[in-house]
Length: 437
Image (cartoon, rainbow, N blue to C red; front, side):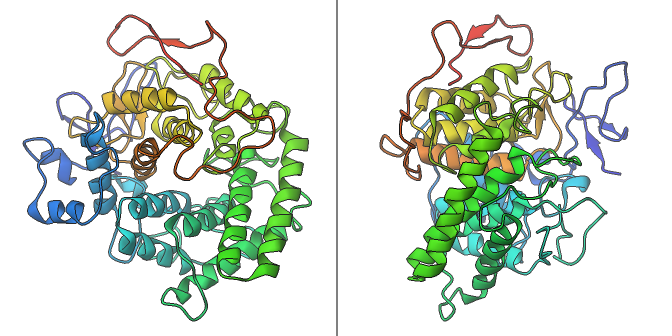
């Protein structure tokens, strides 16, 4: 059982991650020995850490988010073991490797100039056991051998691995210095092609980032696989392997049509039901070309999943406990930046910045009263903040955005006047009107 650190006063609790009362409220559960918890004054960086930062770049440097992105980068480094294993968070139950989180951490570190660490993360992923029909396990021990429980496999991980290979800028030629990553590219691409029958059908149902069993294929599973197909097309094309690139590209176009057929025009979690969830952001740049229907759903998700403290729940059908989740909020921030909606991205970055832990790390959750909760730091959120800050430094159109589909208007605010959400800030502050899309 993890040692728990209370959000108020630093008192130690041992209640399995929840405070007592009729309406349990999540608390911070970071280990007391995490480097940031006991470090004073807040934000002190060792000479060795400063040297590491100086060897790369800090996205957001010179902006009001510089302290947040600097801390996020350092937290990613601290969560990453020498063998490339990325702990999901600084708490016992998060001291495992989720392929999804690792993929985002690799891209964030690469974009901040720390390519060596990014490649090592990809090498760790390449060494994991990959089921030929279902993909990666939900999570792995830090050694890369075995899993901590019997959670179902999550096939979205292979899509994220392909996206990360492309995002890090690895070209795993069979005879190049990163040839050991070639198996990761080939195995993941082959699996996506196999389970979608070259893009002609949706993949089988699989748990996604909600970490819950499902009986129908969710958008949170198919969207990363579609992003992975597109990434593998770019990878094979850059390697000069035209036939394989054409196969991936054709499969991506077919699968995109299947997604429009089964999930459009509303893009709910299971197509026609399940409510909107953060997976709609995985259908936006930088993961996919923007389309008007997806952009409308992306805006609607921000309105319908808005929670009391001002962040977002995983979906509109998520339990109504008032808790905001930072990874989902960060996904919207990144896609807003990559699609040219700078004011929306800035609004979400500001919200994340205001709800950091007392030692500056980004938490997993924020309670209805605006208190950080869960492990802090959380690798996925830290990665998303770094990537969002990097996108905001780009010229109009974004650094890594994909071409929009016909009829889309990147950067256009699709919410009509008067549709911007309102939320009460933590501590009873007056509600404020904010742009959401």
